[in-house]
Length: 231
Length: 218
Image (cartoon, rainbow over all chains, first blue to last red; front, side, top):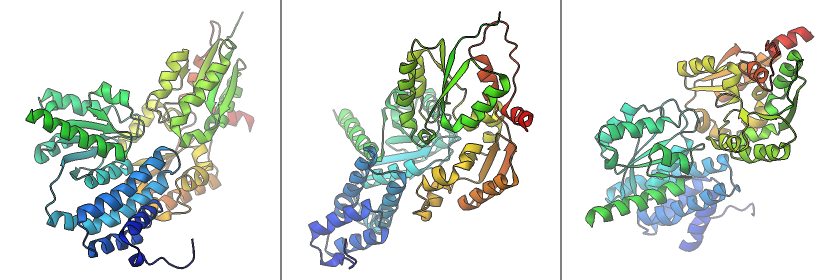
């Protein structure tokens, strides 16, 4: 790359979007903020900027993370860059009243304070058009039930990084069943030690291996649920 | 006659000093120890396959193969491998759990779940595995993304710590922006577990911890 700084305003739309994918990949938050503003100034709708520049860029990051080309620090930098773009877009998305795909309550389970993955999932879900109610870390079953009661979401997403805390997902799902609420929500689980078999055993609807998969799975399951209810 | 079975211990390289000390202190000459790279600590998904490779290679050559790992972030995948090969492993989820002793660790964690743990090994390798491993040498701005939810760094020492070691722990805590606490826990469940494998009637089962062993050597 030359030492001369690239002037993003000189790029046509398609090249600017491509450049933003590269900037996301490199975790360049200021450049993402600039690129987002330039596209908006050119008349792009906020949702289009979100989908084509940010979400697509993070999808590429997610693929390379999955394939072992990128590692956690690089993904964190990319996520922080996307966060910078989202900070510009979020109020505009709210103003334009873009229809949400659905609502998600998202939280890390009791005893677990890890939230890097959860935050990434939240961002990708938001990018996919979900309203995300993030209830943070170290949530006991009452915190989940209260949040579900208040938000009435389509989806409950639970995250755990520790082998010792991931069984708590079953505590929450069992409590939902006990209260006759299990079928009210699609339950997604994820986190480094979690896998598909574990998700099945604890009674989740799906396991999501990464943030991009979580967004895809959430969208597919919500649409399928709506189609089933309509039919 | 005191006949002991021949046992291979396939262990994480992070436990090498502690294992060697316990083996020496207790005369566990029937244990042959083979180590896997301690770097697997940072890539737990690779642990089950790496262990299985050793289990396959050791098949029929030993009376028993014992695995010197906890679950170590494999989410039960290591246990699935062990089930296939009829092998056992160390108790607990992580090294810092069985080194502290399961019950003691649970109490420590319950008292302050926002705790980041270092063992002697992790303290020695802090710069390489934690600081550089998380990319904080290149992107120190990510520190709070990783550690923003933590409040305490708890150094669980296996061998009596020197002043220099304690100063290193303080330095690590300062770099992470955490409050330092230190507990000398020795080797916890490691010695009793090693004593329990490959035993035959006639063994007295007396346990000598690595801390005692170091004491005897000095």
